[in-house]
Length: 473
Image 1: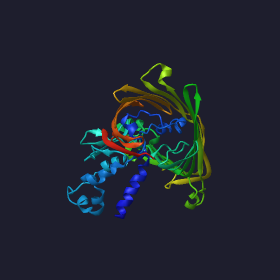
Image 2 (image 1 turned 120 degrees about the horizontal axis):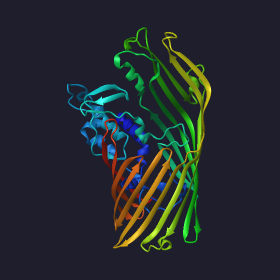
Image 3 (image 1 turned 60 degrees about the horizontal axis):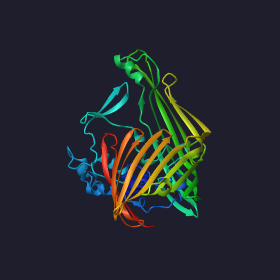
Image 4 (image 1 turned 45 degrees about the horizontal axis):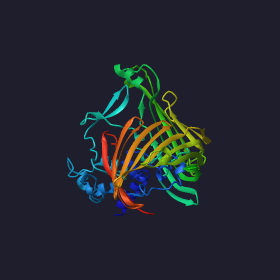
């Protein structure tokens, strides 16, 4: 039982970012709703009055799959592993791919769990190294960066906490959290070397025959924001600003390359292979690793600004329109960060000697200042259309930092019942949302949403159900 609890605890910790998602927004296809859920993209929404919907506690319903799905039954696998490990084929199978998919999306009960490939092959081509699913006749997707639930790249001040504790002091919103981010990249094979060795010979030197890199970081975050309303005739304007800081306790940035040179004869079998890898380490305990290592820490911060305007429908001449809201937020108007630590580079060159050489450089500083804001603009209109029906129409656009996202959505409420849907285009990928809910009283209710995300490694789409409950506090 202790091992089971440890496993569940690790699962919950790794999936903290996913659990924090708003089920209402999922049902709207990602469309942004005025209120606290929009505050991460516009600090003017920090003290914006809530309509009582959305938010709440998103339940980790994905945990249910680990007990009801026979191929993902964690309790049975940990307590009775023999049927899984013996026999040809084994009497029972634990689907690690489906378990990985569910672990990284605990906020959703996945309906169509993925099937692991039964046979793999390794293909070399001008496009690089490919792991191929023989049964499905398609390559595996080894781009780990698409698994976004672990947070954003950690070498910037815009880190994403895996969990945080929010509280307010008057109009000031404060959030303290802990971040632990991992960003690996898939190995890349130089396509030129594939063409070179097609005849069995190696004719040139390739200093970057294979390259790979990864980053990981951990620390503490502190966000302090302020938002206040200003009345301008019939329009209420909210202005807000926020400072986001982090104190880094560990940062590892590793990169490596394989070097291939012709040998005594052009034959690829006589090729000489070397390597080089570099690791930057920042940690207050790094000096314990040995001579030459220096202790280090990281810190940084960023600034966000935003504005929101609420206008009555009468001001726009639309009697059915109760309220029209527009907002503009700039995240990371300026960002600064610095990490101090040690760089260790290990090189092996068969032409130099039989042993690898490591050079350790202490007291290295990394970081800088950048101006690359994420811009979010949104609009929302609440309509009363008669018969007890109310409609909330939404639209937003987001650009910057390599993003271009557009969403539109609508939510219809009649008495206790709410139905919502939306579509989006997120960096060229189409997104669709469908959901509903029950509103028992202001702030008390539940939300459901259909979820969809790319299935890791094997491709395709995993569909699921997300659930959130609200208790009015």
